[in-house]
Length: 520
Image 1 (tube, rainbow, N blue to C red):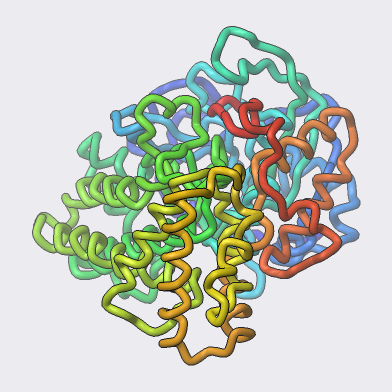
Image 2 (cartoon, rainbow, N blue to C red):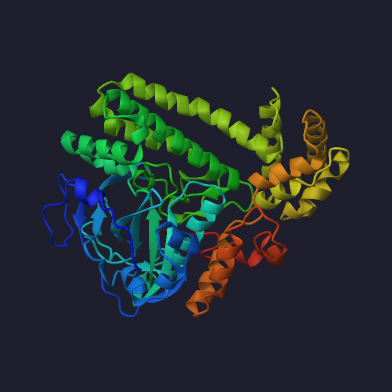
């Protein structure tokens, strides 16, 4: 097994001077060296062939003992020095102080085909940042992360990737709903891969500690390796850097809104500096179209991270990042200008995204109002977001009265679509038919374009839970089936038709299907 190791992060940035793996406050350092924990009986459950290729490996490599041992943390790759990253964060809007990689250990960086990949194990043991936790992960959360990160990539959403999923052979104690009912679960390890795992909190920590020297070192490093097109570090370059991070963050969130993804825990330590979806914890996919929905039980009361608030939280988090890099710029106004641009860009990009979901490519001054009417209707009775937009591509403008028939499968209770609600829907379809006459595409062209932005298959929570339930019994076939189906989310794939369906009633209030915690 041959990897082109090109470590940079742990070579060019300041390291923690203490090498013992003990919980502590780490000063003036971007990371701490730490070795993964040896596991009882590692077993590889699944490998992503695409990611294997991306880091320069072959199928035969994935079958070797060396691969198993390195990507479960049981062997350290020659000439590498694993480490955990140091950062802070605002959690649910409150300052949480030092956090860091509490159960993630970065193995090395690989360069292949002119692309850099940072390779990281999640659930590979304690680090100086583990606080009161054990640094481990369980099968339940690991299956969800492994499947979702690859599914998001194929949906066209910026994301970290996953290389492999393995059992550790250890039992891990977890209180799944934080209600005092702890139980042992199967331990697991996911190998995560990304260009970088730097987060907003990676910069906040040095600003909070007034360590301007290390802050500048880290920002300069980030620009050199990840934003080199912006030029050499300078005040002007720092502003361009912040602008690009802002743009990438917004683009990522617009994609989330497009596919109905709710991250669930948008703390500043979970925000990638590269605008990647990172840290798949208590995430979820909209079933019914509902702005107020969040899958995270911890957030149930205030719903800070609800679907309809994700763009606002992106802006709030960017404000914290602006505060962090302010010492390098020493001028508030240009940062405020970038933050204000985020607000106006959001309105424009959201409107264009919603137009694309409806098959509208020309602009009309009434589109905003027209789309708002649709969103109001979608809230009137529980309507499956994925099925609604996918089936809408079959609407024929010549037959607006058949609109409800076209999208009927999306209603959880179609008998509620009567009286005033039915009339409002019919009125909306009349307007939609009229609006489509302004477009130049044929029906077939519109259908194709709509089906390129409205997925047929997403990783609904109940689907992941079924795969987890099977995996708990030692059956991993459904993991593989979902993994392959989700590679082509916009294709019809008739062999997977049974997954193009509303959430079953049994899953409505089942733990793991509608309610999730950060416990993993």
